[in-house]
Amino acid sequence: MAQITGINQDNESCATSDGGIKQSYGLDLNDLGAVTYDGTNALLIDGITIATSTVTMAKFVYDDDDSAFYNQEGERGNKKHTYNQQASMKFSGITTAKIEAAEAVKDLCAMFWLHVTNSAETLVQGIEKDGNADGWIRPKQTAKCTVNINTNTGADSDDITIIVNSNAKKALTCSLTTTEIEALVGA
Image (cartoon, rainbow, N blue to C red; front, side, top):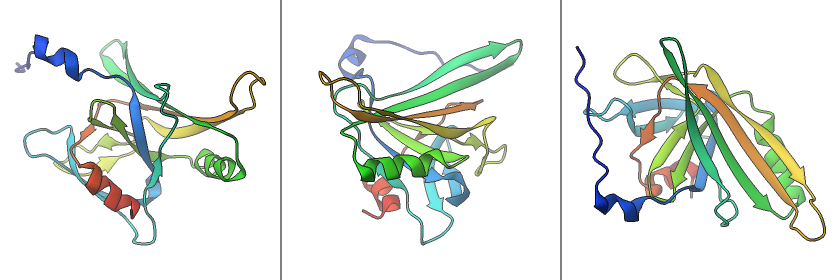
C-alpha cells in the first residue's frame, strides 16, 4: 500500500497563483553534469553542475506580455502515465542575433531547461530522475526546439517564437535560487 499526500486548496493560496513563466535557462543535455535531489523530496532538484568549465547555461528572457508558458499535460495509456511537456517563448523584434540564437537551439537534439514561473517556482524540462538517489537519465522524448520566425502583418510586431517539446514520466522541480541559477549562466 502507498501513503498518498492530500492537497488543501485554502483561501490563502489565491493570491499566489500567477500563471506563466518569466525566464528560462537552457543547456545542451550533453553538457549537463551531476544532478542531486533534496533528501526529503525525490522530485526536487537541489544541485546542478555542468560537465565542462567552458560551457554555461543560456538565459532566455522573453516578452513581458504574459504569452510565455511551460505546460505539462498528463496523458494516461492503460497503466502508463506521461507528461507531454511544452514551453513557448516569444521574442518581439526579428534581429540577426535573435535568429542566430534560435538557430543554435533548434539544431540541438536534446536540451535541459529550467523555467522560472511567475509565482516563483522553478520547473524542470528535459531530464528524468534516475532510479538512484541522485542522477538523471534522458527522458522518453528529449527536449527539442522548434523555431517560428514571424513577420506578421504591418498592424502587429514581428517576432521569433521558440517552442520546446518533450515527454517525461515525472514532473521535476528545482529549489535553486535565481542567484544560484545565474551562477550556472556565468552572470
